[in-house]
Amino acid sequence: MTYCVAVKLKAGMVFLSDSRTNAGLDQISTFRKMIVYEKPGDRFMCLLSAGNLSISQSIREILQVEQLKDPEGGEPITIWNARSMFDAARVLGSAVRHVYQRDGEALKRSGVEFNVSMIFGGQIAGEGMRLFQIYSPGNFIEATPETPFFQIGESKYGKPVLDRVITPETPLDEAAKCVLISMDSTLKSNLSVGLPLDMAVYQADSLRSDRIVCIDHSNPYFRMLHDTWGQRLREVFDSIEHPAWDGRPTDAPLMVGSQRHAPLKKITSPQEKLI
Amino acid sequence: MTYCVAVKLKAGMVFLSDSRTNAGLDQISTFRKMIVYEKPGDRFMCLLSAGNLSISQSIREILQVEQLKDPEGGEPITIWNARSMFDAARVLGSAVRHVYQRDGEALKRSGVEFNVSMIFGGQIAGEGMRLFQIYSPGNFIEATPETPFFQIGESKYGKPVLDRVITPETPLDEAAKCVLISMDSTLKSNLSVGLPLDMAVYQADSLRSDRIVCIDHSNPYFRMLHDTWGQRLREVFDSIEHPAWDGRPTDAPLMVGSQRHAPLKKITSPQEKLI
Image 1 (spheres, rainbow over the protein chains, first blue to last red):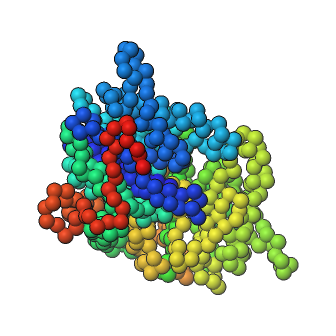
Image 2 (cartoon, rainbow over the protein chains, first blue to last red; image 1 turned 45 degrees about the horizontal axis):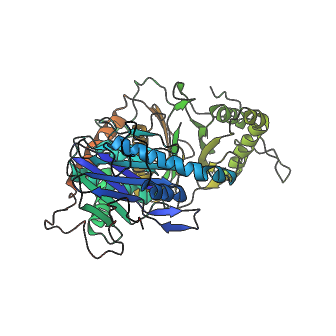
Image 3 (tube, each protein chain N blue to C red; image 1 turned 120 degrees about the vertical axis):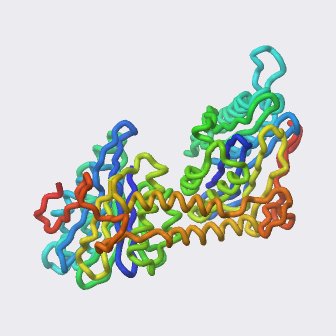
């Protein structure tokens, strides 16, 4: 499995990926799922991938040479000369379709689904930052202020904290902290997501990034975050009042008479009707 | 969808279910997924169900009259006279198989999977509490001290808090609070899980329970829990140090030189090799 997440904020973008790949539980390896394309001052792009590794590796390889015909008759469009991230995402979608044409039929014969999903975001000089999620057929959607993050792979364990924290106004460092907590919850609950992590933080309009870091078990910040989050979460949990069953005075009673739905009727014998 | 969770502790058991059922996004209804069987002083049993509603309702109906042959030639075994929860779970498994025999083939012809999962727990006089998870084929597994809770339906969003809090030593009220937080996270992230909730709390060896409550939007305890948890989680999040990129002094640096894995190499041109 895999967990990757990317966030687009007013202040910039954050990308995070794990590196565990498994073909069954008995074949677990480390493959890094992030790739950063950068021509400083001209473009910064980051690609995260989940799904079948043979497919995503092929896409990454082909993406380096993939070309789209320019409708205006100019140079063919590649990720290196595309004038917009939308065009770059189209080149990526086209690379996905090339791999499908090459491998899709043979995979199907072996009962293997053509399964890949990718997050692709960044900025090209002349336009704002953009963030896309690309599906197996090569089609894609773009993040908007209402939905400023995308997740691929094992996304559920780590979603609640993103839902609670991330808005387009979130500062960049806060978002970096948030995606790391999201990853920490996922690592805790799914063995097939694993360290090391790759994180890239991009500041709006910088068209380059030096904030690219690989995080493994010994990383002091990630260890601090893991320990502190777990411990304080527990303190918050302990600080909240228990439910009061026994009629002791409380501002927040659990058993109240005035609700729309009645408590469940108990079934007390085999003859009793359920409804 | 559905979310149900049950916990077995030394102090007792906690059962919680939502009540949203959907056949596609445009057909959402309220069906309660918990059923409590009680013969005070003799047995307390609670059944939670997820999956295809027509299947789980049929199972519940059949369970009232389902009988297993007693190998010692005595009275047929039902959930009402079983001498152990294991036997009661076998009766339930047999009810699942009866519904499969009746509906399985016709469902298959319509391309509908025979999909049902259930949690069944409680206590029968003469033995300890037991908690089972029952699968579509009618087979089942039992909770142990190492794995003291089961979840069915949309289980992932609400699992991290259970993983952090629940052990067999957890007090009953604390476990009730924990499953409600687990449900709150699930409600927040999956629209197809919805209020009202049914919660049953069973004290070890009581062989009855009066702590059965239906929780809807107006429930003061659940509202307090929802607000407080969200707000304090946010405070904890804010209290943790941001990552330090810029070399400012910190006890927990994010960028360190001594790791096993190197930071990602950037790709800077179409000619560059990826590996």
